[in-house]
Image: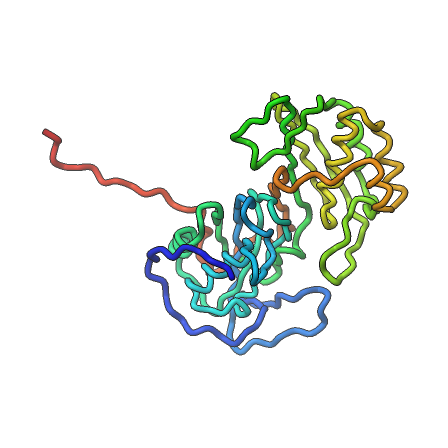
Length: 327
């Protein structure tokens, strides 16, 4: 089961939900491109985009599961409490199915309601009031019907952190992998350059846990190795990523940084298109060093609908001045 702490909520309209559907108002349809049939609405619906950050340490990843706590499960619990809708009516979708232990700074999703809001600040405050402290909604915005958290994506940015020192920093132990080998950032940068461009990444993907077979051809726009003292940040931006692709690419770069293998081995493994070839040289790195930092979208899908409330980025509390001086 999924659990979340219940706290006092601000007053929110209690409206009757419409029949279950996954389409959106502000006219238009929100359909999975892989599905040919559209669901016709009896009532208009409204789509809402959210940006969420979370510490993935104690969660079993993003995707909804009944048996273990996941980010989507706990978020949907809060949404059902606030909206009085069933999770099927909410049709919530996340942009990336992060694994157990992986963190996020800029995960994006959307959900649907059969009613509009005059303001989103109260909903935003209520959500964060219900969510545990290691999950926070950073932003809520109205979305046009064309927006889809997964299918409108143009690129994703992930960062894997490595703490390169003989002694691990206890304050970063949940967010960085500890390497006691002295890493050469220059040769790692050279090797990372071989990932740039459009390639078949079959050799860097674990077998997917879902039934569909994803397209193994992805485009890597940049792959930077940034040194900040003992902390190495491996930042990669791509059109999309296969299951555990980022962690497998990082694992090979660490072997290059240790000077166990040459930088051009990346080319050989890419051309093999064989996961077993990578396994000869590198083991997968643990999930806690990985963070989903940013998701970029088509500009036209980020425009705000007409007659919609303003986006909510949270609000500061204010204190009125005391008119009676202290004695």
